[in-house]
Length: 202
Image (cartoon, rainbow, N blue to C red; front, side, top):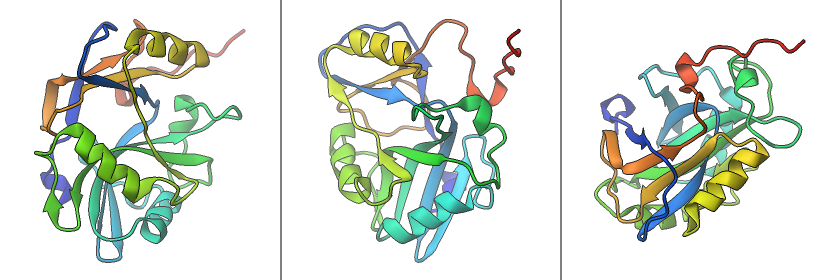
């Protein structure tokens, strides 16, 4: 499947509210990446649609070696700090360089020639876990919890995580902004691609 033909699903900004039938995932602070493998070739593209395959050769090699078959996955690529927390400032300078990069994969759209986007989210997550979990140290499966969403969000922010993404458990994968997915993050936390640099302390 042509990665350029896929419109990414995007969460709407919302306040933390626990809802039955929803799941909660950590929101990783990096660049949104759609990755696809057809035959032996792996390609990456950014949320705006730029081909990023040559930007992160280590991630491309890890995906090519470790994830079998053909697939399209939705993920966030991050640089991790010494605590294992995503560092967006470092991510700005990671292109083409050796960094502690990790790809956090949270959805699968296409697998072994089948379009999975109409399936309920939890069914896609089950297939994604089998595809990704334990395959490579640089490629992580994004797990989830059910219930206690606001408390989960509070703990994530306390640890320095960007926030939480709340998703309806039966949601299909639909392109564009959708109320079926919500992003919870602190006020003033800007979108990654447009985010101003932090001022140096002192």
